[in-house]
Structure formats: C-alpha cells, structure tokens
Length: 80
Image 1 (tube, one colour):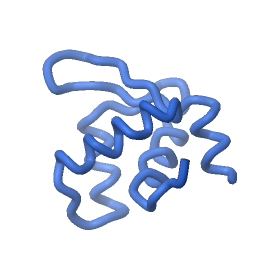
Image 2 (cartoon, rainbow, N blue to C red):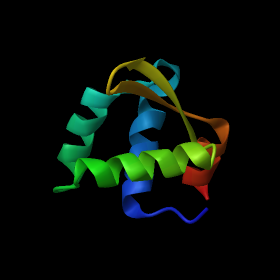
Image 3 (tube, rainbow, N blue to C red):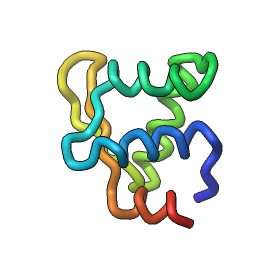
Image 4 (tube, rainbow, N blue to C red):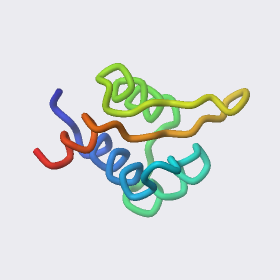
C-alpha cells in the first residue's frame, strides 16, 4: 500500500504511543501540531484505509470515540 503524508503521520504518531495506543482526541491534537487543516471525514477515510490495510487496529471506546494501535505491518510500512 502506498502511503501518503497523512497516513505516515498517523502511523508515526501511533508508533510513538506504542502498545498504549492513541485515542481520537489525542490523535487529532497531535496531527494538528504537524499539519494544517484536514477535514474530519477525510481523516476518517484515511484511518479506515489504514485499518483495511492491517496497518492499524481500532478499538471502539464509545459513540464516535476510538483508540488507534499500530500493527507490526504498520511499523514495517514506516520503515520502508
């Protein structure tokens, strides 16, 4: 899977959090520090694409809340 800059940013942030994962609010905060303006629906499409590619897993924490965990495939994709 070819990764765009936003996907790389998501994976990099998730990798830094390790096994603890990163919740939605913290992910949005961290992304805002490294990039300017992404529409929430576009962000969710990119997160879903990473999930479908087995680069991340999502844990649902409630309505419209989740935690992102990087997989070993996601970590390998960052290194390539």
